[in-house]
Length: 138
Image 1: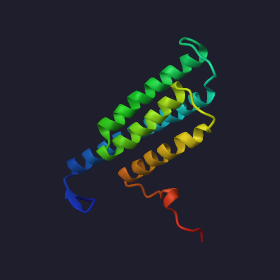
Image 2: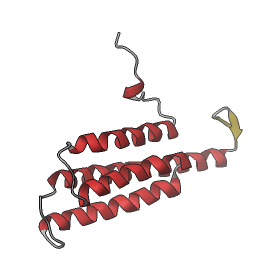
Image 3: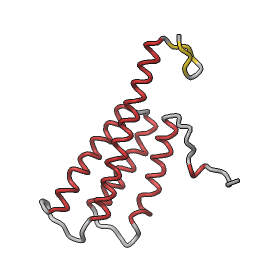
């Protein structure tokens, strides 16, 4: 028997829990990687573009990867991650494919990105503090 999270688990249960956690970390890492790539594509978006041009040939695989990574998070991670993951992916999708106003891209993305990262951090039981929850410096 192994003590995990205040409970006693068999070695098989503990191994399964560790495997599942590794899968969740991998799914979140892939989502973050594709989100970063999509943000770069959004920043590089030309004023006018056409299906098949150079920008589109970069944007399409980045957004396809983001969609697959979003579904992996939905499949493998806690349900409380679904809404912030979908919200962040939706904001990125809009930033890439739709016209936007003069507001800097970061102002559109930062709130949904921060919400996603905060919930992801909590879902993994991370010891790394959320910078928005930090107290005054000493």
